[in-house]
Structure formats: C-alpha cells, structure tokens
Image (cartoon, rainbow, N blue to C red; front, side, top):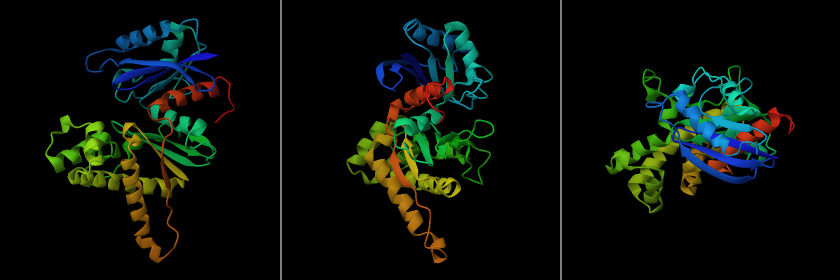
Length: 310
C-alpha cells in the first residue's frame, strides 16, 4: 500500500509517496504560501494540487504541520509560522475534498516518532528529540510512547522561558535563543558579517575551516543549548537526547554540544554533595530532513490500526 505524506513547513511543503515500511518511493517540494500574502484557500489549493497527482493511487494522507494541534481531531489551535491554520480543522478540510483518510501531527512530534519507529530512539524507553530550526521544536518519548500533554503542547520547547529579566520580549524564550537565527546573530556579532548573509551552510563552512570567531560564536550558542538540555535531562531523565534540524548534520555542532554538556555536568557544584549528576547521551536524529515525513506516516499507521500503538 502507498500513502501521500506531506511535511508542511514555513518555507516549503515537502511531499512524498511512501509505502507502509516507511520507504520513500518519490518525493518533491513546492513553496509554502506566505501567510503575509496568502490565505488558507491558497494553501489548500496547493495541497489539493499535490493530492491530484496521486488520486486513486494512495490509501490516505499523512501530514506533518507546525503549531499546537489536536492530533486526534485535526483541530489546529495555532499554526506556528502558518497563521492561517489557526482555528481550522485540517482533517475535516482535507477529507472533504480528497475523500481519503487523513491524519495530522505536529512537526516536532513527527520527528520524535520517526526516531522512535526506526531511528536513534528505537527500543529506547525514555528519550528527547530537539529540532533546531527557525525555533526549537521536538518531542518527548516517555515509557516508549510519544508524550503529548493535556493540551497537545508537550515538546513545544520554544515556549521555555530562559531570560527572567526579558520575558516581555521574544528573545526571552528558548525558541529565539537557540533557533538557527540565534547562531547567525552570534556569528554576526563576532565576525561583522551581516546576519542576513549568514545561513547554516555559510556558518559551518567558516567553522569547519577553523575560523576562531565563528568557533567562539558556536561555543556560546551550544553553551546556552547545553543548559536547557541539562534541564530537560533533570526533568525527564531521558536516556538519549537526539538533535535534529538541518544544522544537526554538522559533526562539529554535535561535538560542541557534547563538550558543553559534559563540562556543565563535570563542574556541577552538586558534585560536592553527590557523585551522580544526570548526564544525557547526545546523538543526531537518523533521518534529518526526512524525519517529519517518516514520523507523519508512523502516526497515520498507528491511528488507522496498521501498527500497534506507540
């Protein structure tokens, strides 16, 4: 059996034809309608045009989307960077038009499900996925299951407050201190390169060449990240923290995160009282940019009874 799987991001809508084993048979992407210029109807038109390519071929649509959403009913409380999704029920809208079963899950939670199903958290009882992108997303695996919380907002790490003196500003929250843009800000401050000229590729190109200014910025960025990873470890006692997002493919990033998490734990003042300080294993998500697609399909298979409940 084959399925249409859609990963709806702020910049691109990625889509793939996949089978029940999670194999990607073909995939492509189209630009996401900008919420500042387009409407929900424009967005739905794009989704319908994608579906028409596979109408009659697929058993259903599995979707990953940003925002806080009810993955049981399909209702989007927020749409993240796609504000036109707020207050809309995507399952109802798509099933009415496409006449096939539809499921939807938050993008960070899809990444966590992909790792639970076939990736770095397979057979792990407790673990955490952190996705470093425009902001900070992810998911919590507790007792071998995706934990969603009372309001489907567990794992919305961007909302974590990190600056008690600056809570009336966006940069008082984790999503803006450890999103990729924050790394760009630190690199710009150290190098003088305008931030708009910096992306993940450019920054790590300089870092991997040994540019001391960029390495200093990367160290600052990962120190802030290490503090929150430590906090999550204390709160949830996850065995593994798996890092996702485009920049997670850079070994240097994982090296710096490991260094700063280890230093924090080794120099912890509580060691004067106890020899044990919870130190997580840091690794990378296995599927990188395909995580949301694979996790969305896994969610569909569970919801429709093709797999045992996660």
